Image (cartoon, rainbow, N blue to C red; front, side):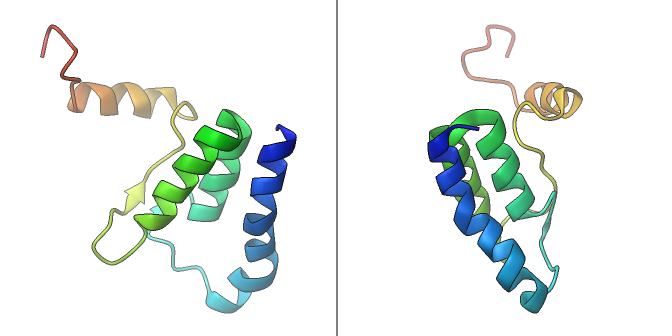
Length: 94
C-alpha cells in the first residue's frame, strides 16, 4: 500500500477501532463498507481505492444497494458474471 493509501486508511481504521463497536454491525453490504474501503485502498491505491470506498460509503443508505459487492478485481468470477449481466455500450456484441 502506498504512503498516501496508508494515510487514507487511518480514518477507516480509527472508525473500526473506536466507533464501530458502539454503532453496531448493521452494514447493508458484504463485505462491510470499512473492509471494502481498506481492501480497495490496498488493491487499487489511494486515488482509485479512495474513490471506490467513498462511492460505497455514500451508497450505504436505506435507498442504496445491498448484498454481496466485492472490490473490483477481488472476485474474478463475480466480476465476469456482473460484466456479462451488464454489457458495456462499447461491446460490439451488445
